Image (cartoon, rainbow, N blue to C red; front, side, top):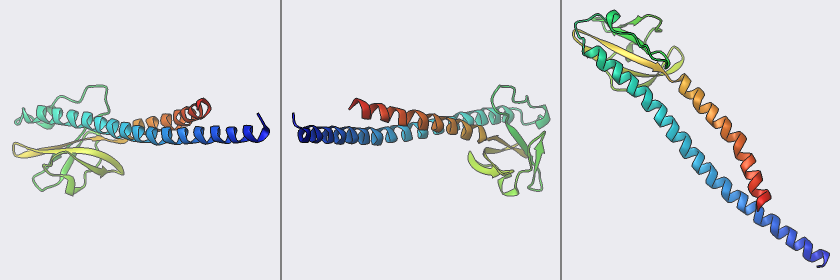
Length: 166
């Protein structure tokens, strides 16, 4: 085989490998983006379930002071709570930061900024007052960050293997 023919064959092989790598990269990007979205949704749904469970427990005891409701004793991130006051404000319970007045209401699950961090919040009227319970989304963000970092390390290695293998 002549040198010119070997050169054409080599260029063709490189083009084929580059095209295969590009196609795998696009597919991998789509799969990883979908995985990240699914993981984010599942982590948020787990937090929502904890908030709803805690609120259901609190609402089942409308005549009991909030300070007498069993604390959140699992090994997840702590749930924070605020008691709705008759004047419309919210009194933090324990180590909870101050809650902006606009968030001190009976609301469905929402994501809002509290003390500079994202929180999932749930508010409900209980008896004459009410309760707002929330969980920080910071751990969720950290978990997603670690997942994306792993993808950024493994992805290029996989693409290099595809290029060499093609």
